[in-house]
Length: 118
Length: 118
DNA sequence: AATATAATTGAATAGATATTCAACTAATGA
DNA sequence: TCATTAGTTGAATATCTATTCAATTATATT
Image (tube, rainbow over all chains, first blue to last red; front, side, top):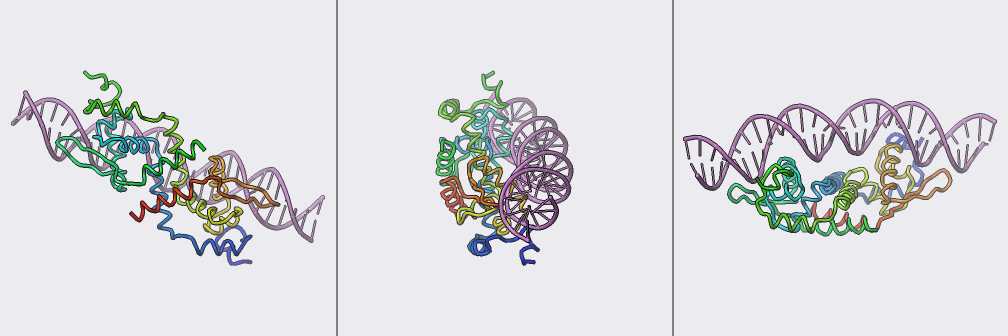
């Protein structure tokens, strides 16, 4: 009975590769953060918001009109993006203007589009 | 009553920017595919699998051991990645070996990590 | 032929999440 | 001061999805 039967429901087939890979693997926290970041781009509404903000700074109402969605749902999503430091905002009068706060979004979109048009 | 009140619960504040942005915007399908693609990277388990496959070709059992998870859950996720053309597989005997089938994954991970270590 | 094992698959479940709705805050202007 | 509007927020709901479990397929071995 190999050691690994205790932690997995199968035997190790290529012990060396498994051990080597585990050794090189980034820690749990890195993968969690990485996945959380990609999850933010992995929603149609948020992808559109980010694309739009990459074109222009916009207030919530503008974004709602561009996406043809309610202010409330846009505001919820902006809150999510803001808390994750992907967008930032400034208040001017009654309006709140949002801009991208991440240099990588554009590059990520480009790579994503390359995959789509493989 | 402005035209936009019919399609959105608020008035347009910057009509020009809104119109210009709508005009430039990629179509619905593009955003859906883009979001679906990022969603695939937006899960800790799948992110680990993709990272691991970027190191070595591996069989299902190996991946399950590296991630310390059941073969079944790994196989489900591999199926998802396979159907999205992000990984491909070859059968050899009883084992099925998986490899990356997308050149952009590595670049995406790098950009994602740059964001994390902002 | 019979057994064992790698992998897949479908159904069920539990947890996550996007949108809606209603209530609220803050700023503007009459 | 009162009414209006931009935006936020919390709760509720409906949908989605990751993992588990059990059953099944396919290959290899005795």
